[in-house]
Image (tube, rainbow, N blue to C red):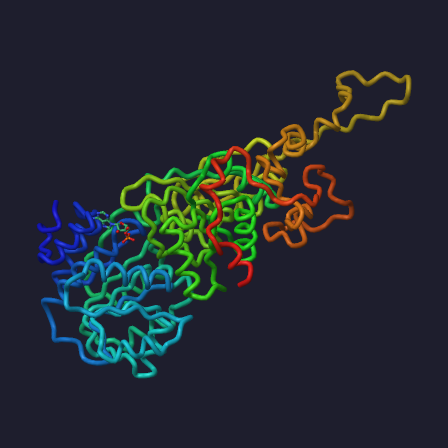
Length: 512
Ligand code: AMP
């Protein structure tokens, strides 16, 4: 099947040729004719399926072929998105696909000054891509009115609900003309999404290109179990050991992001960060630097889980699992895009077993587990299944206590004497192996995470990954002892030049 056979006009076909899009993806093949015919559409299409072109191409065509020119302070197509990043990305797609067409586009989102957005709206725009809160602000200030809106697109509708935009969305729906086309795209289809769809769509064409809530099968996924406090060490170890050059790394908290970025930077990696506390221009700059290859590691919170379109991203590493299971689908959807293969590795500690179970229930797949020698979890991560429940190990029957034999008294028959040195053998595997395997464990592959490193306080204090509370006794693991050695580059990595941090990458971050 070709794009021409879907009924797209020549200027669009030329732009697709320039972008080297040869054939429509499944969601495009189904959505483009339906949207061109003016139908409402729901599409269960996860990120990476080409859904943006699935709605942008036919809408561009309808804008050229139908309806009056846009008036001032009006928009003809309204695309609602959950995040600023996605707003920018969808805007770029419209600009690329609509090159040479006499149409105006704008992205409007919070966190930046509203005035330039108001100025641009004066002339009116054909396509307004907006986050719900900022759109309502603009509407309240009469910068945009909705009477010319012919199509509403909800992109990543599930994410908008997750982020608590339900009230804003209802306010927008109430303000829009009743006569309009509505398209709803969502990676996951929860009951809330179905209820919303039932309220705003009329006899929609329902499209499902992959079963909802599944992950792209070309993405190789697995889990490495580890204690929480050892996550940064294991992460650095895996990065060095596998020569992972280019990765998007997800961490739960802003502190965790900054900590890991510092560790990577100290080890010689060019790194930047994205999290909610960073101003929008800095977030976009970080993304651009990552996309252009200026930095090869991008460490982010879930702010970046959706809406980032990065070509050829081979690897996503979840240093922490997401709180919301659907976000796992979105995070790992950053790789394996447009048919490419990808890898998604998650470091999982005992606390996260319920999150892992919820993810496995959502994607209906048990993720294979691995343990990294030297990093075996002392706190066992309970087994999980696709039912979403933790599998409890049957309790071992208690061994009868061996009565303490008095000196010279024989052991009772049938009771094995405890072998000498048994205490030593019952030491946790991780501890003993770490001591025996230099270059692994707390100081993996030569990465001395010590000195100023908050992890060197043995898992508590400023360590953003640790939940351990200080116990009465001081930490006794010899390899975790603080030293004043500066962090060094992990062993076995290529020549320094290839990993040198780009000027200002971490320095700038530290000052922010
Ligand atoms: P999306 O799911 O819309 O975020 O798109 C994912 C990626 O696929 C983007 O990088 C698009 O540029 C790319 N893409 C979309 N449609 C096609 C196509 N028909 N052929 C090749 N690449 C595509």
